[in-house]
Length: 146
Image (cartoon, rainbow, N blue to C red; front, side, top):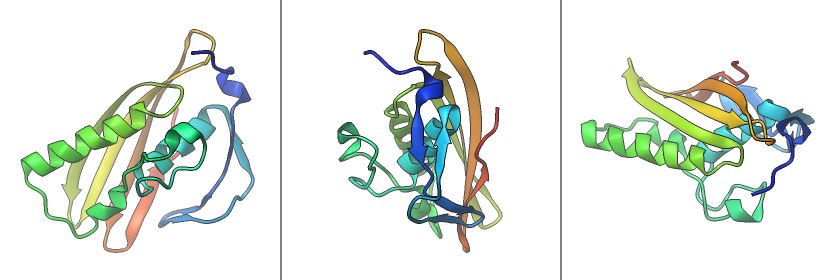
């Protein structure tokens, strides 16, 4: 598959607030790795069929905000981790992904890392991200880690 260089990617910024996590209409644009990181957040915080950046994304999406007030056993946690990794790997430029899920007090912490392609045959780097889901809703703890 032919891709544009990562630096050429542009994504509307629909994230109004990261604490708590709030989406709205576009608030400007993000570019390059930040654009893909935004897409990764959207991929795990949007209901199925709500992803909007390409025709291929239709029918995809999970919403980790469904973890709010959830009680999970080990099997449930493993299922969520697999679903998160599957969603992240479906985002263009994501070569690999890992995910962890842990309960911290009354909040679920979804920690994940994505390894991105530079679009021209190399690696752009691995970017760790974290989303917490608690009684107050979801929050992104780090969006542009490098």
